[in-house]
Length: 132
Image 1 (cartoon, rainbow, N blue to C red):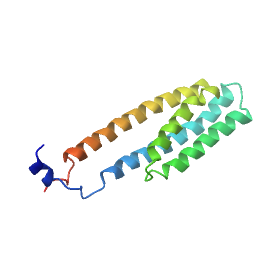
Image 2 (tube, rainbow, N blue to C red):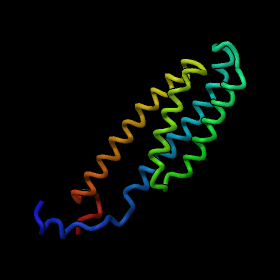
Image 3 (cartoon, one colour):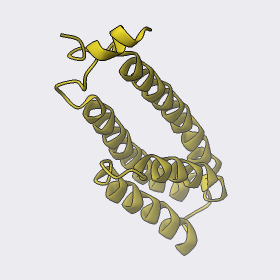
């Protein structure tokens, strides 16, 4: 890319991160549904619910709901990834919860790939609306 090409680029008319933030919030809400559906699994298959497993699962769901509304914050991605670690640590409540956390960690890996792709396209001026 030459200096002349760099002068042609400008900020896109629409926020390119808005759609990605929406995807991240949507994935968190889907995770809330899955986490809460884990309660009956732990109750029936996991040998019953303890106050610790109920608190952990409901607390994780509540944190995910709160995090879904905080996606505009610069630290939201770190919070999302931290919640994924907490979801994977659900192995102590029941292995099924932990495996669901691993499954969603794969989804977040793909979201990170998409984020990197948007960053590269933005830097190179390849997003729609960046060229005249």
